[in-house]
Amino acid sequence: MRRKLVVGNWKMHGTLAQSTALLQEVVAATTELSEDVEIGICPSYIHLGLAKELLQNKPLLLGAQDLNSEPEGAQTGEVSASMLADFGVSYVIVGHSERREIFQESDQLVVLKIAAAQAAGLTPILCIGESLEQRQQGLTEEIVIAQLNAVIDQVGIQAFDRAVIAYEPVWAIGTGQTASPTQAQEVHWILRDHLAARDAAVAGAIRIIYGGSVKADNAKDLFLQVDIDGGLVGGASLKAEEFISICKSAD
Ligand code: PGA
Image (cartoon, rainbow, N blue to C red; front, side, top):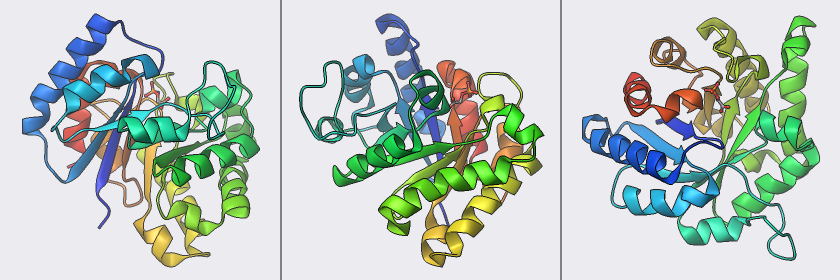
């Protein structure tokens, strides 16, 4: 039985005061949450320290939104996997479509980041997904499988032994246009089936979460799908009440 996982991706949002208030509200509500659901919060780097302090001894895990693929070095402005692990971070988002698009991150770089994260003991959350144009052209399966294969070919199927996959159709991110539970389940099944052809145990154990306009009012139906193991939540994770409601929907 896979434990459900809900991760809040705060992106580049929040002042110190706003982030403090949000964390406090989420923490205060954790007593209402079931232990069957694992919850992670990925604030910006600058608020990781704050989050670490406020999440101490709470059933919430700390995550980062990105990392550099190199172990250390002259990389002004960057943060390495070992720095994150040393700081107490558990999860790191890798290959988010915003990074692929805005910062031109290639599959190759994404693979290096996955390997770096795992070498440091972090659990990467690998984001994959098709654009609207690709979906309209019927290329969804081809695109997500290519993104998955980039990792399998370079690191091997064991890369998914300790990783999470987030299926995030680009057209659903921040648009309010969520994939329907059926549309999402279809892709999640394709991904799990593809992994199963290489290693059934890995495929059965890995959590494949959905991201793209997950909200309090659509989370339950998404999370009820057999291959959807939780959510990566952007906008709705910035409102404590809504985020908590999404976490409850995963139970
Ligand atoms: P959204 O973002 O929930 O605001 O669509 C999801 C994500 O980018 O991870």
